[in-house]
Length: 79
Image (cartoon, rainbow, N blue to C red; front, top):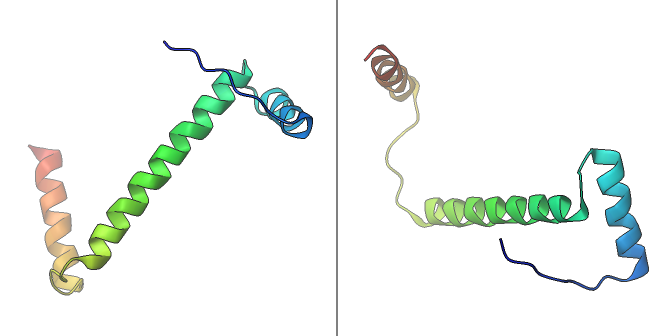
């Protein structure tokens, strides 16, 4: 694992220390790693949403669509 040192103003360091204490993190590094992971997830979701928004509609999400989806899921669970 690599090491990275960061500088924070006192107010931010206090905030991080409080979050570590209140939310059960062992260290400030654990807290920062979690923030970075959440940001990665957010960026990936944003990318997927933008790709979906710019794609052509596949068809109506009607009762037939959901019935077919349920059948496919049941088939995966049973097989």
